[in-house]
Image (cartoon, rainbow over all chains, first blue to last red):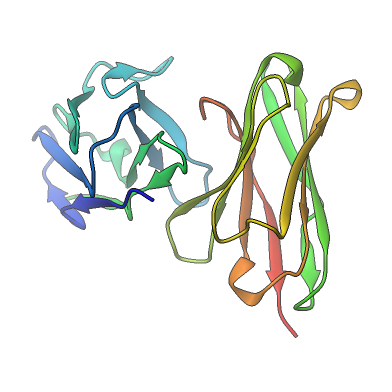
Length: 106
Length: 114
């Protein structure tokens, strides 16, 4: 099983700043990474799939990158509505998720 | 509108069984793989099981292998998760999601406790 480690655990930024969330895999991922946003009391929402493709309806300020053992989610110009937990995921079998990064807005 | 609606959760004693359902609307399960993901209280997301678009292949996390069974009924456009030999650590909010995880239900809660 591939273990995903996300960093930082918590990210606190001011509105308009750039957020970079990192995810490292315990071994190289042969398929793809994905990123999910989860707000309190809500189901997760797919942001990025196939490592760098934005899901339908996701604003352009969200972008994904990476390959092999590392991937990242970048949020250009964070907005208060971006307050949430963010989870990375890898699609090799078995699918695994990272432990999450909490994004806070100052 | 594409929607998923889970049901079947509840309170169950350790060792018991429960069957979760996930009814799809706005699309047909026949063309899509589907997934179950769970989230223990205050914890992160854990992938549980998946079924291929053809329904011929199923996949399970090690934590549930041999105890849970994923299946579907195309005529009812419904996905199922049969959960047996339940343990306290199976307590969670269970979500069904499309194979690509771009569509999620709101979840159904399973509590395993004596």
